[in-house]
Length: 44
Ligand SMILES: [Zn+2]
Image 1 (cartoon, rainbow, N blue to C red):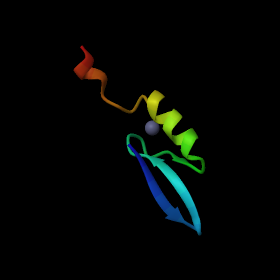
Image 2 (cartoon, rainbow, N blue to C red):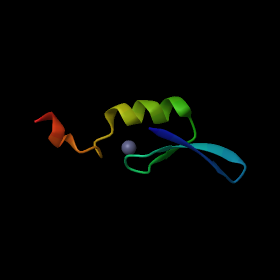
Image 3 (cartoon, rainbow, N blue to C red):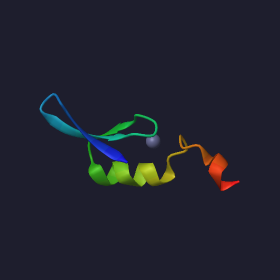
């Protein structure tokens, strides 16, 4: 999930998987789809 965070009067979008912050929601969502912080073990 992408989490919205207010900081320094700006809205940031944080990847809940790895904590990376983005200033653009689309960037955050795109990152999340490719985020490798998720545990892939359930796919095995
Ligand atoms: Zn991430």
